[in-house]
Amino acid sequence: MIKHSRGKHLSYEERVLIQIRRKDNKSMRYIARELSCSPQTISNEIKRGTVILYHGSVKRYKAEVR
Image 1: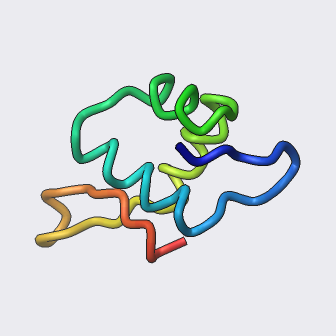
Image 2: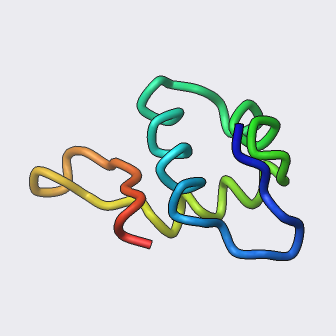
């Protein structure tokens, strides 16, 4: 289990974990509990890292984008 340090940026490993959990349809609160950070942090990260695929028809979170 990855532990997020308070006041620090999310690491690449944490972003990959967010990507995997979103693909598994886990909630933002579930992911936040797993990383021990705020649900708002997860929400902000998903907003920043979401890309539009297939001419705007699909939105996906990508860890590499951020």
